[in-house]
Image (cartoon, rainbow, N blue to C red; front, side, top):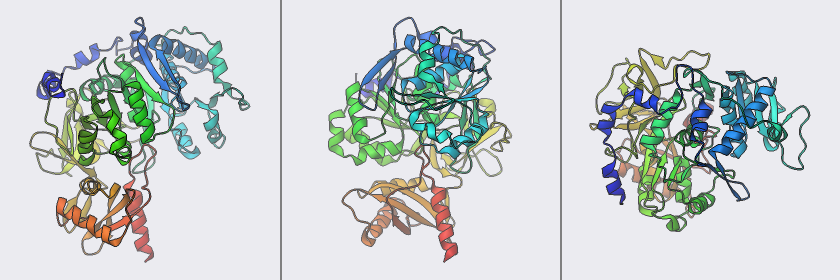
Length: 555
């Protein structure tokens, strides 16, 4: 069946919105949110009995191992037994500082099995970032491996450490030998039942605009995660699914671990680091049909060239993108060279995904659009006074809490949450509605540039730059200017074979001017080797902007 015919068979978006009932979403769970639910049961135990595949794991050395739901259930029970022996009880926060190995999924599920709260730690974090998260969650125990253990030695009041040591490695003094404990622990452990409002994860914001804040995730967030996997990713039983996002961050933990397992579908882990070559190889080796990741990763696939993509053309059924806006050039390239529909999805650590170009629902998909509110959410655009705006009126994207039954975020952990007020959660992102009801992304409110009275979204300028063959990646910020308020400045990473000359800078300026408008082109262009990013790959424009302000102050 062609993609066109498949799309015709999909539910219409308007009907999905009109027919949404929270009771139907709740009915997808086995447990009772009023006090008899367990996240491990929902993501593992209830899918046992059919010898179903739960995990495809490729090690850093290239070996492939597979695990069934039954095997993950046994592993989670051993973890829960170990946690209980260490005094962990329901509600305690436990952290994982491990690469993408099977033991990581076992630890996550085992924490949920005992009713504990799982806290993800990205393996690229340094001691300060880890300590800040321990302080946030009052973390009681952390599991790690030898490669990451030294980071914990610098942390004041470090929680109890369980270390996964390989053969021949020495266990640090005082640590729990995780491998030994798991081998000796029982593979039977009765799940601890919880309430839907009890926590299952302790997340932290990415820290793009300040210190990370704790984001408590309740068990009832599973309803939203399931809806995203069904409506937006359109995960099918016949799919081979791979979300390349790291589970140390929200998109990876929510939708590379929790989401597929919740639907009873296998997920994929690759222990090695990201490269275009390894990604293409794994897609071909496993027969991946549904891929999820970030625009940063997809730009690296494009940079590898057309020949690298050629063997996989037509193999991917759907591709999902999240983390930052998806540039139209990436969409066109994937269509031309991979014959794969790639759709932009929008969300936050605090929300999960809420605005999507849904693979599973029939609606118009425009290049450059973040899509439509996911059924179960009502999103609005607010002006500075908190009033709802209509089409083509730029404002702040917000969630109407009262009319969003899938909304689970109620505030930061033990902190004030000024973004929740008057029945709305304000995302901090500038957008506008299109006449068809879709959302066009402008930028974070603090990223929007004001120049000569015009409001300029950096995303549009960056997208125009990326369409030029010389440009691999770009970041655009506003630089203070006494005449125009701000000047548009572009920081550009060039493709191989191009040199950062004044002539090329002028060519890029004219390219953007022609693509957008006379007021939006970058009057300043700087060629750079790299851009500041969060560990999850989001460009930190505020660092570039701050450096420009400091540079001006010195002159």
